[in-house]
Image (cartoon, rainbow, N blue to C red; front, side, top):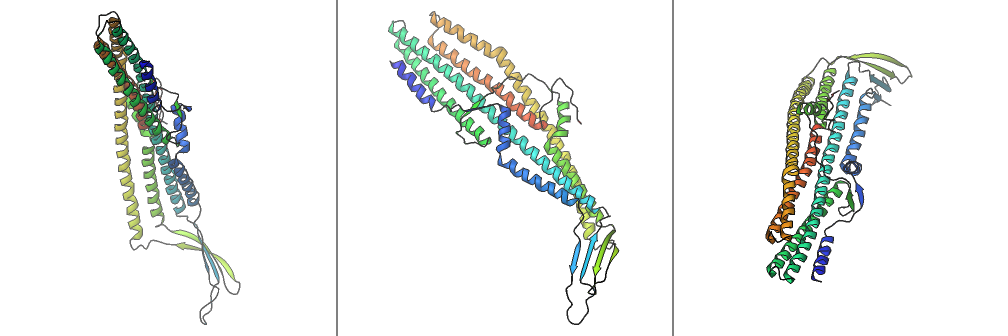
Length: 411
């Protein structure tokens, strides 16, 4: 009866810390859902539309200058009542403006890609944290069942007179520890799922089930190939490259402003007489404003080229760091799986067998079981760390990782 009450208490406490099972999502589906729902990406989509409109506008001629003079002041006659002047922009101003607009559009596109990549990294990391928490919940419930069995065995041995009462008391202490582990891991799982739900644009307590579990990563990649790929496709590198192009377009705009241009003009007099004419503008006279603008634009090109170089250096460092972290996590997981974990399981089984045959003490069983749980936690954490590192490596490279058996081709 006492054991039934203990188990009921455990189930009651544990149920409050276990999330309800709901929609089942793979990590890829979670990323897609987050991209669809996240407000920041929707805002960037509107900015992209604005940049596209700017490109269309930059490719058109400048608006004509229209002057209307309905009447004169005093007795002076009015030479014309309507005049229109349309610059033809044969000096390259229109092409230069379009170049600037295209550069700005490319910057926005790269910023959008960077925002999506950052969101994907956050979602993947949150997903694998929740998946790890889920594994630890399962492990702690398994340990709880074992603690229940140990308490029943200790009570039986005490009732038969084979063991002192102190063994049963120790078993109750271990059951209490196992119960606390279940409560803690259940709470951690709820918190992890709440963080993931928030990134998915859902209510924190929305029911959610994880379809994927952390699996060991055995693939290997070349740092040189990943660096080459990352320097080409990373959104921040593309953004820095587009910024250089935008500044070069601004240099072209400043130079075009200093070149001669043709305009078509038309006029209409009060007598109804009109005509068309070609006019030539000669902007060679400069009091310093155009030359200063050109110098500013050229300085911005140099600054953004330096920023591009810095972005490339940082990209190489991030790729190397992420790859090293992944390789470290892989080595740890292999060591745990092939050496430590298997030995810990064997030790726990042998000690338990010895206890049943009277050759091992109760505390030896408890110690072996605690060690096995700790090693399992470390192993699960090492496997999950591979997935964390993999998400970081994908972000550092700027997209999906290539097949490790296929040479990287950068277009």
